[in-house]
Length: 309
Image 1 (cartoon, rainbow, N blue to C red):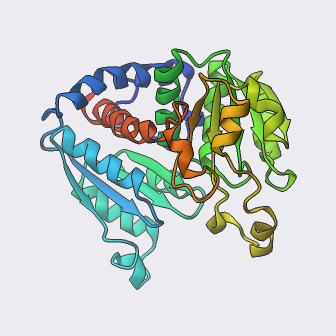
Image 2: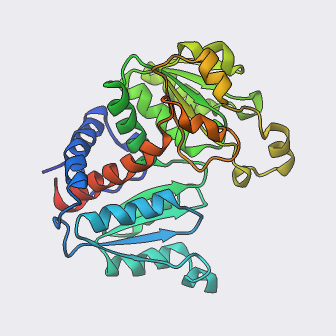
């Protein structure tokens, strides 16, 4: 029986390196299923997607993953179409929806919402992003992409660039990279530094971490550059956003002149202006491969949770 069977997926901190390796290994098997066009191993199972904040890739990739494994999907038509628009609280919503499905995928603007939902329901809950807190399945697919591209994670020099203060993807990813023994380079404006409690946690794990303000000084040494957008919607103070927007821009010239030829550039998407479109043509650009890998990894996760692997 898989360690993921009937399990909630709320925070990357709930998983050991061994468990993450189990998921990555199963994703390799699931990639072959994906390439064959899928199968029907989850026939009769129902996935419910409850998204109370915007999403394109996460929502559609979960739905695609479930369909590719023969399962069915039900979803809210957006928060305005849900009973929450009438004043229903999240607790009552998830207590209702659990009777319609076998697993719930939840995105919510408030930190801790996914943990609350998991405590209230008997079906597994998968956190698809709770505010600026965690986005564990994005981390799963990021790890899988790095492993596919570089053959390993431990010992790699990985730069996390952009909004490290509010960016939930890098909060989850930094912790996972530390578990695997990667060397982590944090690149951000002073105002968007990685939160101190996460830095302390990385130190406790024994991670090798360096902070930088200048991308150019560290770019030639990196194996992987993970770029994040500076997210207007995450800032409680609009003036703070105005001060830091556009702090970094990855250009074709910058990559061709300063990066290694085997650098891998990743981005959780969507992007705004932090990576110029002509970078897409470079061999280092792998962010659209991440999108494909997102379906594969979520197929693996749903299979382990609902089918036992």
